[in-house]
Amino acid sequence: MKVLWSKPDFQEDELNAAYASLQSYIGANGPNVEKLEKEFAQSVGSKYAIAVNNGTSALLVSLMCLREELGQDKTVGVPSFTFIASANSSQEIFDNVKLLECERDTWNLDPIKVPRDVDLLMAVDVGGLSCDYARLAELNLPIIGDSAESLGSTIDGKLVGTQADLHCFSLHRAKIVSCGEGGMITTNSEKYRDLARSFVNHGYCKDKRGYEYCHDNFGLNFRMSDVHASIARVQLKKLQQYVSHRNHIANIYKNELNGLVEFQSYENDRFKSNYFFFGALCKKRDRVINHMLSKNIEVKTWTSVHRQPIWYSSLNNLPNSDRISDEIVLLPIHNTITEQEIEYVIDSLKEVL
Image (cartoon, one colour):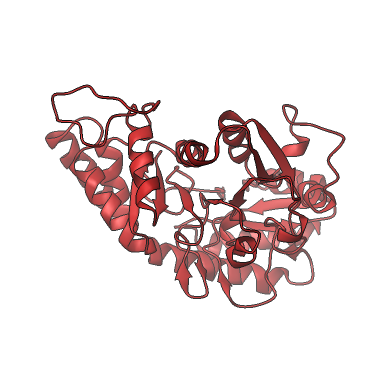
């Protein structure tokens, strides 16, 4: 048996939607993009949503919105335990980036460890588990929520997507809702909405007429194609089904592996994860990885940004981020994984623990 770490769930509905889009509109900013933006905003409870071509573009555009307000000579606080796009995009838009420590249990940004010389935050919802945005808000800093992994997750019963100044979602092939490649920005700010729409589309003027080339911002082409939007619209309707399935699989992992490995966790029930990934901390990580691969089971690791060659610095003292990087094994979990496959993963893991 081969068990995949991730797998998009594209069925006949997605194929039909893509075919219909290709027959009616080729290009960006088509009718499906407009409909997706409205449906996505309704889904997460935000006033506005702006579609982009991938999750990293969502980060870049959101950072550009805050740069417009704050100026470029500012320092962005970014958790080191994140995918490198969070840090790279911040460095691209602002002059300084400070890599910050995560909490030991949640693996998310630790509000207590945010220094005073940080001007804004890139808060990352690691693995689908939301940051504690209420605690972060007490720091009185502008916040971008890197929610690439947390679509469908909740805080105090509310879906992630309105807690920060802007939230950035990914619709990459591995994400819980996918169109192959795509991203979304959500915000309740009309100002950020207008800036984002301009930055996404070459800096076009807000009120330009259809035949005009009028640019009042330095924007680029971050637009989503209509065919990608058509697929995302179908996928979005399945979000709660996917979240429910992933939670079911995660509970099986927890019940079977409790006491053998450590899991990501909060101390209370305010936070509900979509389980974009399921991470297990294993003391003999390399041995575990080799054994699982030998059993034809795809697993992954995750290395904190401060330990990446392009970012490496011996000045970073981030013991929680280091520990998780040394021990984490990301086990298979996706929208169509079966209980039979999970049982095989668990049995194989127990052989080596």
